[in-house]
Length: 314
Image (cartoon, rainbow, N blue to C red; front, side, top):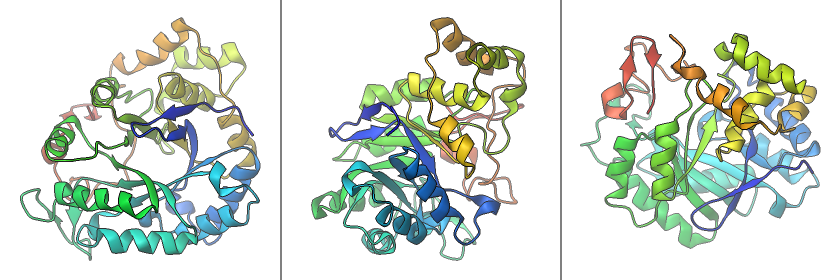
């Protein structure tokens, strides 16, 4: 098994700090997720992250069941989709059935906004059920013994503040986009103060790794004889941010789970990359609706500021 550190969440559960992300986008053909998970488990990954909205839970579950790796060694995350806010328990049970497994390690609310079943509109927070209502239903899942931890995804400080005012269980993690162009330092500091682990998706920019061409960033990779991807992943892990990275290529998959030990100066170089002109921005475009909103909510509703250089979350 790969030597991957684990991060302890607020309920004592330990999450492997590098995991395989299973959002496939245009690569999501039949069998791709299953083969990718099989290869990942074979080569040492023990954290698999998927979602109802990725439409591959059944394939992921099949790969896990047939991998030969004990279920107790695998950390499995999936997510509640925005159109299922009115049926939290049923949606969870649907996911569990699709996996064909006895339990899920981490169940996340994928986004804070509720959208209609036909994706035609998003509902404002003032209309119920909202994310506070959904969280109350997610808390009840902990009593079933079928999920070990619950958390959120794509939550800003603003919406975490609203949630924490009424919740009984503090989210175990908040999974957000994070990479050298969007380091999320302020959000991480807030989450740590509240006992929430910040975790990262799209650490390589989701096919848009703008920072790969930065000469200072490349210098760090060259000093280690490593790939730029290894630097980005190792930088996040060294910050205590568990990260999810997707690759169906076995060689890249193995490289991504081979962590580097960055020096303090190298950490500073990557930490400060976003301060260069035009660098501080989101690199993920898949959530935008034609009206410019993110799954139907404005940047103000999400608590994500917008700058001339692009979307900047926290």
